[in-house]
Length: 582
Image (cartoon, rainbow, N blue to C red; front, side):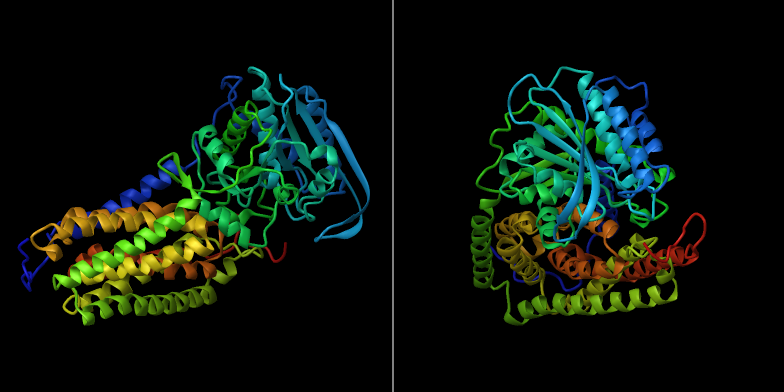
């Protein structure tokens, strides 16, 4: 193999590559978000066996006329309507009243509540499938999304099921009371031994007013249930990182109670439009028919698939790692995570030894390549924190709900990303003469390898985020090893684009959900991860550093525009109310 020891010192990327890379990244992000968007709402003329958001909306308009918390007269009116509708659907509703002492981790008091259980009879004698949501609201809002949309979706699902062939299993429709007070209806329901014989549960919730319906929680040892979920749903939005993260959070839903009793299940919700959550804005005007269509299609797909599946034993001995990609759910056994991590560690060591032997690596260049991204992460996090503190003090604070939701928070999150981008491009511009492409790429891969090792042991559901980009980078390194000039080959447009687009593909969905459902102050933690992603994308960042004269000003202008939009709109009013308490 003939090795060219150096490339010309005046190397510059092709003039078209920086802009092409940026536009391609934007295109890929747009495609990912397009595939995740809710489907078009079906009207009332949709076939009887299909879910129609317009048909379901009639129920929402009746349920969410006013706040109806547990024990209120409005709650009793909603219950009467639901019982009547379930009777008309032939579900023979069982109105289960509870009046007595209830002790849970949330409450120790005498309470009165009423659950409603309807049943669609199946043709077989297997374990039933339970579809569940809650019909009570918080006192501060009508609860159109939390959770009247889900209740209406289950009624429409029940109607659609009965318009077609009967399922093999019984399908139970459970509408619980007192969820907002601390999962009280679910606690009462699952303490009854006769209710513990269900084969599987799907719960439907909301933490916003629009967006995709995503599956964010499963029971433990979910291998079998994920395999079946992937077959059941036509437009899945989910990833195993969400499940692992949710286990670490203090949040609970009715499914939490079922899981504590060892029952297998799935949890669905939507979270865009968080500013309306638990406020008077959670009304029928803020219901998205597209979102309800997605929530309902998920419910109907689960009902049709699991309602015709033998649910005698849906558990397994292992978990699966999974993520949605262009309308598909990619999944593989979680037990692969440790072997993948060990193999990837060995591969990195092998590449490092190989390129050191052929004099493509220096100790100084490698240390600079490793330490520079870390310093850039620290600086960009500090700058983003300072920017958010300033914005929050000047105008964003007055546009924040008591729940923590901030209007236009996505604008600020993108600003943090741009700050991080500017810092990393600037630092890369500084080191381009001190470290070569190979040293930077191996350093970025090493940082990602550390994240892979950490996630494999502490958050295995997230390991795919680091393993798949590393696989692409290793492919680029392997190709470089067989070229005349390994360093020069890392500047090839295919390498620049490939090592950029795969991390973007993996992380777009995760950041989208995090940015929509968590307050901007917490988004600052994502700056650290974004910085390490940029370190992995070193071929593209290095290329953009050569075009810094227009790249950095463009990023600065974008930040100013985003912040200006947020500032201009930062005025509470009838269309953008801000409440003092919830």
